[in-house]
Every structure is written in C-alpha cells, then in structure tokens.
Amino acid sequence: MTDRPVTGVRTDPLGNIVALCNPAERWSPRTTTQIIRDIESELHRYYVPCARGSVSVRVVPEGRGKRLWAATGDAVCSDLHDLPSV
Image (cartoon, rainbow, N blue to C red; front, side, top):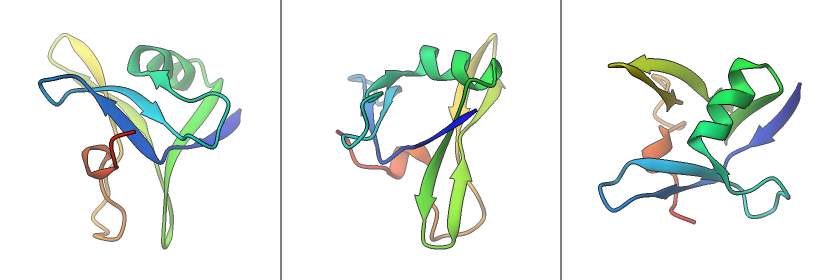
C-alpha cells in the first residue's frame, strides 16, 4: 500500500468534493470514485498531513452511496472541506 498525502480538493458547483489533490504528486488529481476504489482495494492510503501527524482519509457509507471522510477531534487537523481548492 502506497501512502499519498492530500493537500487540496476540487469541488463541483454545489460544494461536493469531486477530487483530492496534491500538486506536488504525479497521481494528482484523483477523483473521489478512484480514491474510494483505491482505499477499498487497499492499493493506496490517502491522508491529510497536519501538525501532529496525519489524518487518514476513510470511506464511509452515505445514504445508498459512499463518501470520503477525514476528520478528527483535533482542531489542528481539519476535514477535507477545509483544504484549499486546487
């Protein structure tokens, strides 16, 4: 499993995250569908770097689908919607 740091997001006009990004990485951008597949197949681990380590991006159920989630109680590490738009 390869670790991939996420430093930004791309959103649609409604504010939904449609891709995770890291301009310094060749894999970027990667759509949420691709990332869900990568995580569930254990091909890659995506994470948000922060001052006290990192927060893993997880796949969580939402209604009849799935979504990406990266949040913690630590205010220093923010959720995906707090990352800059790239």
